[in-house]
Length: 387
Ligand code: SF4
Image (cartoon, rainbow, N blue to C red):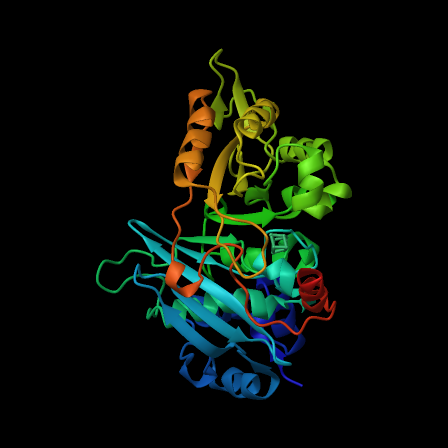
Protein backbone atom coordinates (compact mmCIF):
# COMPACT_ATOMS: atom_id res chain seq x y z
CA UNK A 1 0.00 0.00 0.00
CA UNK A 2 1.64 3.32 -1.00
CA UNK A 3 2.10 5.91 1.76
CA UNK A 4 0.45 9.31 1.44
CA UNK A 5 3.23 11.94 1.62
CA UNK A 6 0.72 14.51 2.89
CA UNK A 7 0.71 12.56 6.18
CA UNK A 8 4.38 13.37 6.91
CA UNK A 9 6.10 16.32 8.53
CA UNK A 10 9.78 16.84 7.67
CA UNK A 11 11.29 14.37 10.20
CA UNK A 12 8.75 11.71 9.17
CA UNK A 13 9.48 12.32 5.48
CA UNK A 14 13.21 12.03 6.25
CA UNK A 15 12.58 8.68 7.99
CA UNK A 16 10.50 7.42 5.08
CA UNK A 17 13.22 8.34 2.57
CA UNK A 18 15.89 6.79 4.80
CA UNK A 19 13.85 3.57 4.76
CA UNK A 20 14.27 3.43 0.98
CA UNK A 21 17.95 4.38 1.14
CA UNK A 22 17.72 8.12 0.38
CA UNK A 23 19.64 10.98 2.01
CA UNK A 24 17.97 13.56 4.30
CA UNK A 25 18.27 16.47 1.84
CA UNK A 26 15.87 14.62 -0.47
CA UNK A 27 13.17 15.11 2.17
CA UNK A 28 13.54 18.87 1.95
CA UNK A 29 13.33 18.74 -1.84
CA UNK A 30 10.26 16.54 -1.73
CA UNK A 31 8.58 18.68 0.93
CA UNK A 32 9.06 21.70 -1.30
CA UNK A 33 7.58 19.98 -4.32
CA UNK A 34 4.59 18.61 -2.48
CA UNK A 35 3.64 21.62 -0.38
CA UNK A 36 5.37 24.71 -1.71
CA UNK A 37 4.67 23.93 -5.36
CA UNK A 38 1.56 21.80 -4.72
CA UNK A 39 2.85 19.13 -7.08
CA UNK A 40 1.35 15.64 -6.98
CA UNK A 41 3.00 14.16 -10.07
CA UNK A 42 6.42 12.70 -9.24
CA UNK A 43 7.43 12.86 -12.91
CA UNK A 44 7.34 16.68 -12.68
CA UNK A 45 9.76 16.81 -9.72
CA UNK A 46 12.68 17.43 -12.01
CA UNK A 47 15.48 17.88 -9.49
CA UNK A 48 14.88 14.41 -8.02
CA UNK A 49 16.89 11.55 -9.53
CA UNK A 50 14.95 9.56 -12.10
CA UNK A 51 15.46 6.39 -10.07
CA UNK A 52 13.91 8.06 -6.98
CA UNK A 53 10.96 9.34 -8.99
CA UNK A 54 10.36 5.85 -10.34
CA UNK A 55 10.52 4.39 -6.83
CA UNK A 56 8.12 6.99 -5.47
CA UNK A 57 5.62 6.10 -8.19
CA UNK A 58 5.37 2.67 -6.59
CA UNK A 59 5.80 3.46 -2.92
CA UNK A 60 4.03 6.79 -2.39
CA UNK A 61 1.22 9.08 -3.48
CA UNK A 62 0.40 12.73 -2.87
CA UNK A 63 -3.23 12.08 -2.00
CA UNK A 64 -4.99 15.41 -1.74
CA UNK A 65 -8.69 15.74 -0.99
CA UNK A 66 -11.37 15.35 -3.64
CA UNK A 67 -13.79 18.17 -4.29
CA UNK A 68 -17.51 17.61 -3.80
CA UNK A 69 -18.65 21.17 -4.40
CA UNK A 70 -17.46 24.75 -4.19
CA UNK A 71 -19.05 28.15 -3.93
CA UNK A 72 -17.95 31.76 -3.98
CA UNK A 73 -19.81 34.47 -2.08
CA UNK A 74 -20.44 37.96 -3.36
CA UNK A 75 -17.71 39.25 -0.99
CA UNK A 76 -15.11 36.84 -2.46
CA UNK A 77 -15.25 34.27 0.35
CA UNK A 78 -14.70 30.79 -1.10
CA UNK A 79 -15.95 27.56 0.38
CA UNK A 80 -14.99 24.03 -0.62
CA UNK A 81 -16.82 20.88 0.44
CA UNK A 82 -14.19 18.13 0.40
CA UNK A 83 -14.80 14.40 0.31
CA UNK A 84 -13.33 12.44 3.22
CA UNK A 85 -14.92 9.12 2.33
CA UNK A 86 -17.87 7.06 3.57
CA UNK A 87 -20.29 9.76 2.47
CA UNK A 88 -18.73 12.43 4.73
CA UNK A 89 -17.76 15.93 3.68
CA UNK A 90 -15.76 18.63 5.45
CA UNK A 91 -15.72 22.32 4.70
CA UNK A 92 -12.79 24.66 4.23
CA UNK A 93 -13.30 28.39 3.85
CA UNK A 94 -11.00 31.08 2.42
CA UNK A 95 -11.69 34.65 3.50
CA UNK A 96 -9.88 37.33 1.47
CA UNK A 97 -9.35 40.74 3.06
CA UNK A 98 -7.18 43.69 2.22
CA UNK A 99 -3.60 42.67 2.97
CA UNK A 100 -4.43 39.21 4.23
CA UNK A 101 -6.13 35.97 3.30
CA UNK A 102 -7.34 33.57 5.98
CA UNK A 103 -8.04 29.89 5.53
CA UNK A 104 -10.38 28.28 8.04
CA UNK A 105 -9.47 24.60 8.42
CA UNK A 106 -11.44 21.67 9.90
CA UNK A 107 -9.91 19.08 12.23
CA UNK A 108 -12.68 16.48 12.60
CA UNK A 109 -15.68 15.11 10.75
CA UNK A 110 -18.40 16.64 12.91
CA UNK A 111 -17.75 17.38 16.57
CA UNK A 112 -18.51 15.57 19.80
CA UNK A 113 -18.67 18.59 22.08
CA UNK A 114 -22.29 19.68 21.57
CA UNK A 115 -21.91 23.44 22.02
CA UNK A 116 -25.50 24.57 22.13
CA UNK A 117 -25.29 27.27 19.43
CA UNK A 118 -23.11 25.40 16.93
CA UNK A 119 -24.33 23.91 13.65
CA UNK A 120 -21.41 21.47 13.54
CA UNK A 121 -22.02 20.31 17.10
CA UNK A 122 -25.63 19.53 16.18
CA UNK A 123 -24.49 17.09 13.52
CA UNK A 124 -22.72 14.76 15.88
CA UNK A 125 -19.27 13.24 15.53
CA UNK A 126 -17.93 10.76 13.04
CA UNK A 127 -14.12 10.68 13.29
CA UNK A 128 -10.84 12.56 13.56
CA UNK A 129 -9.24 13.79 10.35
CA UNK A 130 -5.84 12.37 9.43
CA UNK A 131 -2.81 14.63 9.01
CA UNK A 132 -3.22 14.37 5.23
CA UNK A 133 -6.86 15.43 5.49
CA UNK A 134 -6.01 18.44 7.68
CA UNK A 135 -2.97 19.72 5.78
CA UNK A 136 -4.70 18.64 2.57
CA UNK A 137 -7.15 21.53 3.04
CA UNK A 138 -4.30 24.05 2.86
CA UNK A 139 -2.69 22.09 0.02
CA UNK A 140 -6.00 22.12 -1.83
CA UNK A 141 -6.74 25.79 -1.23
CA UNK A 142 -3.29 26.85 -2.43
CA UNK A 143 -3.83 24.98 -5.66
CA UNK A 144 -7.43 26.10 -6.06
CA UNK A 145 -6.50 29.73 -5.54
CA UNK A 146 -4.32 29.38 -8.57
CA UNK A 147 -0.78 29.67 -7.47
CA UNK A 148 2.33 27.61 -8.13
CA UNK A 149 4.34 29.11 -5.32
CA UNK A 150 2.89 30.85 -2.30
CA UNK A 151 2.13 34.08 -3.92
CA UNK A 152 -0.12 36.06 -6.16
CA UNK A 153 1.58 36.00 -9.58
CA UNK A 154 0.67 39.66 -10.16
CA UNK A 155 1.88 41.14 -6.87
CA UNK A 156 4.22 38.50 -5.41
CA UNK A 157 2.20 38.67 -2.18
CA UNK A 158 1.10 35.58 -0.34
CA UNK A 159 -2.52 34.65 -0.96
CA UNK A 160 -3.06 32.59 2.20
CA UNK A 161 -1.36 34.57 4.95
CA UNK A 162 -3.18 33.11 7.97
CA UNK A 163 -4.61 29.75 8.97
CA UNK A 164 -7.20 29.38 11.70
CA UNK A 165 -8.18 25.96 13.06
CA UNK A 166 -11.78 27.06 13.54
CA UNK A 167 -13.63 24.84 11.10
CA UNK A 168 -15.48 21.65 11.98
CA UNK A 169 -14.30 19.90 15.12
CA UNK A 170 -12.36 20.54 18.32
CA UNK A 171 -8.68 20.57 17.25
CA UNK A 172 -7.29 19.71 20.68
CA UNK A 173 -9.19 16.41 20.83
CA UNK A 174 -7.34 15.38 17.64
CA UNK A 175 -4.08 16.56 19.15
CA UNK A 176 -1.35 14.48 17.48
CA UNK A 177 -2.66 14.87 13.95
CA UNK A 178 -3.32 18.58 14.42
CA UNK A 179 0.17 19.23 15.80
CA UNK A 180 1.83 17.35 12.93
CA UNK A 181 -0.24 19.39 10.47
CA UNK A 182 0.74 22.61 12.30
CA UNK A 183 4.41 21.67 11.99
CA UNK A 184 3.98 21.31 8.24
CA UNK A 185 2.26 24.71 8.06
CA UNK A 186 5.20 26.31 9.87
CA UNK A 187 7.95 24.49 7.96
CA UNK A 188 9.92 26.75 5.60
CA UNK A 189 10.11 24.03 2.94
CA UNK A 190 6.32 23.68 3.03
CA UNK A 191 4.16 26.75 3.78
CA UNK A 192 6.53 28.78 5.97
CA UNK A 193 3.75 30.44 7.98
CA UNK A 194 4.73 32.37 11.08
CA UNK A 195 3.51 31.00 14.44
CA UNK A 196 1.69 34.28 14.98
CA UNK A 197 -0.37 33.69 11.85
CA UNK A 198 -1.51 30.20 12.71
CA UNK A 199 -4.29 30.05 15.30
CA UNK A 200 -5.71 27.05 17.12
CA UNK A 201 -9.17 27.61 18.51
CA UNK A 202 -10.30 25.42 21.38
CA UNK A 203 -13.45 25.21 23.44
CA UNK A 204 -11.25 24.55 26.49
CA UNK A 205 -9.47 21.16 26.53
CA UNK A 206 -7.27 22.28 29.41
CA UNK A 207 -4.54 19.56 29.50
CA UNK A 208 -3.98 19.91 25.77
CA UNK A 209 -3.67 23.69 25.96
CA UNK A 210 -0.59 23.00 28.11
CA UNK A 211 0.65 20.36 25.66
CA UNK A 212 0.20 22.71 22.72
CA UNK A 213 2.31 25.33 24.46
CA UNK A 214 5.07 22.79 24.99
CA UNK A 215 4.93 20.97 21.66
CA UNK A 216 3.95 23.55 19.06
CA UNK A 217 3.07 27.01 20.39
CA UNK A 218 0.98 29.00 17.96
CA UNK A 219 -1.59 31.74 18.53
CA UNK A 220 -4.40 30.60 20.82
CA UNK A 221 -8.10 31.38 20.59
CA UNK A 222 -10.63 30.11 23.11
CA UNK A 223 -14.34 29.71 22.42
CA UNK A 224 -15.50 31.38 25.61
CA UNK A 225 -19.10 32.38 24.81
CA UNK A 226 -20.11 32.85 28.46
CA UNK A 227 -18.60 34.83 31.36
CA UNK A 228 -19.58 32.46 34.21
CA UNK A 229 -19.75 28.74 34.86
CA UNK A 230 -23.53 28.53 35.14
CA UNK A 231 -24.07 29.91 31.64
CA UNK A 232 -20.99 28.28 30.11
CA UNK A 233 -22.05 24.85 31.41
CA UNK A 234 -25.13 25.32 29.25
CA UNK A 235 -23.58 26.82 26.12
CA UNK A 236 -20.23 24.99 26.06
CA UNK A 237 -20.80 21.71 27.95
CA UNK A 238 -17.08 20.82 28.11
CA UNK A 239 -17.02 23.54 30.80
CA UNK A 240 -18.52 20.99 33.21
CA UNK A 241 -15.29 19.02 32.93
CA UNK A 242 -12.86 21.96 32.91
CA UNK A 243 -14.61 24.97 34.47
CA UNK A 244 -13.63 28.56 33.90
CA UNK A 245 -11.07 28.80 36.74
CA UNK A 246 -9.07 25.92 35.24
CA UNK A 247 -9.46 27.22 31.71
CA UNK A 248 -8.31 30.74 32.60
CA UNK A 249 -5.32 29.37 34.54
CA UNK A 250 -4.31 27.36 31.43
CA UNK A 251 -4.67 30.51 29.30
CA UNK A 252 -2.43 32.41 31.69
CA UNK A 253 0.18 29.67 31.52
CA UNK A 254 -0.03 29.74 27.73
CA UNK A 255 0.93 33.38 27.43
CA UNK A 256 3.22 33.51 30.46
CA UNK A 257 6.45 35.51 30.36
CA UNK A 258 9.48 35.41 32.64
CA UNK A 259 11.96 38.19 33.49
CA UNK A 260 14.82 37.99 31.03
CA UNK A 261 18.11 39.75 31.54
CA UNK A 262 19.26 40.79 28.14
CA UNK A 263 16.38 39.72 25.96
CA UNK A 264 14.23 42.14 24.12
CA UNK A 265 11.02 40.26 23.58
CA UNK A 266 9.13 42.77 25.68
CA UNK A 267 9.88 45.51 28.13
CA UNK A 268 7.56 46.39 30.98
CA UNK A 269 6.91 50.07 31.77
CA UNK A 270 9.48 49.77 34.58
CA UNK A 271 12.10 48.64 32.06
CA UNK A 272 12.27 44.96 33.07
CA UNK A 273 12.76 42.82 29.98
CA UNK A 274 10.51 39.82 29.60
CA UNK A 275 10.91 36.69 27.54
CA UNK A 276 7.99 34.75 26.21
CA UNK A 277 7.98 31.12 27.26
CA UNK A 278 6.87 29.82 23.93
CA UNK A 279 3.57 31.34 22.88
CA UNK A 280 4.07 33.64 19.90
CA UNK A 281 1.55 36.16 21.16
CA UNK A 282 1.17 37.73 24.57
CA UNK A 283 -2.60 37.46 24.62
CA UNK A 284 -5.38 34.94 24.12
CA UNK A 285 -8.27 35.74 21.81
CA UNK A 286 -11.60 34.97 23.44
CA UNK A 287 -14.30 34.21 20.89
CA UNK A 288 -17.76 35.23 22.08
CA UNK A 289 -20.83 34.48 19.98
CA UNK A 290 -23.55 37.04 20.69
CA UNK A 291 -26.86 35.32 21.50
CA UNK A 292 -29.85 37.60 21.93
CA UNK A 293 -31.00 37.78 25.56
CA UNK A 294 -28.70 34.91 26.59
CA UNK A 295 -25.14 36.25 26.97
CA UNK A 296 -25.35 39.78 25.54
CA UNK A 297 -26.53 41.77 28.57
CA UNK A 298 -24.56 44.55 30.33
CA UNK A 299 -23.83 42.32 33.35
CA UNK A 300 -22.23 39.77 31.03
CA UNK A 301 -19.90 42.44 29.65
CA UNK A 302 -18.99 43.44 33.20
CA UNK A 303 -18.23 39.81 34.08
CA UNK A 304 -15.95 39.62 31.03
CA UNK A 305 -13.99 42.56 32.40
CA UNK A 306 -13.17 40.48 35.47
CA UNK A 307 -11.85 37.77 33.15
CA UNK A 308 -9.78 40.34 31.27
CA UNK A 309 -8.19 41.26 34.60
CA UNK A 310 -7.02 37.68 35.01
CA UNK A 311 -5.79 36.85 31.50
CA UNK A 312 -4.07 39.07 28.92
CA UNK A 313 -6.66 38.86 26.19
CA UNK A 314 -8.70 40.43 23.47
CA UNK A 315 -12.31 39.69 22.69
CA UNK A 316 -13.81 38.89 19.34
CA UNK A 317 -17.59 39.26 19.34
CA UNK A 318 -19.25 37.05 16.74
CA UNK A 319 -22.73 37.74 15.38
CA UNK A 320 -24.62 34.46 15.65
CA UNK A 321 -25.63 32.86 12.36
CA UNK A 322 -29.04 31.30 12.95
CA UNK A 323 -29.73 27.80 11.65
CA UNK A 324 -32.94 25.74 11.75
CA UNK A 325 -34.04 24.67 15.25
CA UNK A 326 -31.03 26.36 16.88
CA UNK A 327 -33.22 27.92 19.55
CA UNK A 328 -31.08 31.09 19.50
CA UNK A 329 -31.29 34.45 17.79
CA UNK A 330 -28.67 36.94 16.70
CA UNK A 331 -28.18 39.91 19.04
CA UNK A 332 -29.30 43.25 17.64
CA UNK A 333 -26.42 45.33 16.21
CA UNK A 334 -27.07 48.09 18.76
CA UNK A 335 -26.76 45.58 21.64
CA UNK A 336 -23.50 44.27 20.18
CA UNK A 337 -22.17 47.80 19.78
CA UNK A 338 -22.99 48.70 23.39
CA UNK A 339 -21.48 45.44 24.65
CA UNK A 340 -18.30 46.17 22.70
CA UNK A 341 -18.19 49.73 24.00
CA UNK A 342 -18.33 48.56 27.63
CA UNK A 343 -15.22 46.47 27.03
CA UNK A 344 -13.45 49.15 25.01
CA UNK A 345 -14.16 51.78 27.65
CA UNK A 346 -12.32 49.59 30.15
CA UNK A 347 -9.32 49.42 27.81
CA UNK A 348 -9.91 45.86 26.57
CA UNK A 349 -9.29 45.35 22.85
CA UNK A 350 -12.59 44.11 21.43
CA UNK A 351 -13.49 43.53 17.81
CA UNK A 352 -16.74 42.50 16.17
CA UNK A 353 -16.29 39.87 13.51
CA UNK A 354 -17.63 40.99 10.19
CA UNK A 355 -19.93 38.30 8.86
CA UNK A 356 -18.33 36.97 5.72
CA UNK A 357 -19.75 34.69 3.09
CA UNK A 358 -23.28 34.93 4.48
CA UNK A 359 -24.70 33.82 1.18
CA UNK A 360 -22.71 30.56 1.28
CA UNK A 361 -22.99 29.86 5.03
CA UNK A 362 -19.26 30.43 5.29
CA UNK A 363 -19.14 31.69 8.86
CA UNK A 364 -18.00 30.10 12.10
CA UNK A 365 -20.50 27.62 13.46
CA UNK A 366 -21.96 27.28 9.97
CA UNK A 367 -19.39 24.82 8.71
CA UNK A 368 -21.93 22.07 8.52
CA UNK A 369 -20.28 19.84 5.96
CA UNK A 370 -21.94 16.49 5.62
CA UNK A 371 -21.52 14.08 8.49
CA UNK A 372 -22.74 10.54 8.98
CA UNK A 373 -23.40 10.96 12.66
CA UNK A 374 -22.08 8.06 14.71
CA UNK A 375 -23.64 9.57 17.79
CA UNK A 376 -27.06 9.94 16.17
CA UNK A 377 -27.22 13.34 17.84
CA UNK A 378 -29.03 14.99 14.98
CA UNK A 379 -31.94 12.58 15.38
CA UNK A 380 -31.97 13.20 19.12
CA UNK A 381 -32.16 16.95 18.59
CA UNK A 382 -34.94 16.58 16.05
CA UNK A 383 -36.94 14.50 18.51
CA UNK A 384 -36.33 17.13 21.21
CA UNK A 385 -37.46 19.89 18.88
CA UNK A 386 -40.61 18.00 17.89
CA UNK A 387 -41.48 17.11 21.50
S1 SF4 B 1 -18.20 25.29 18.70
FE1 SF4 B 1 -16.40 24.06 18.13
S2 SF4 B 1 -16.14 22.65 19.90
FE2 SF4 B 1 -18.22 23.46 20.05
S3 SF4 B 1 -19.51 21.94 18.98
FE3 SF4 B 1 -18.94 23.55 17.48
S4 SF4 B 1 -17.13 22.74 16.44
FE4 SF4 B 1 -17.38 21.56 18.37
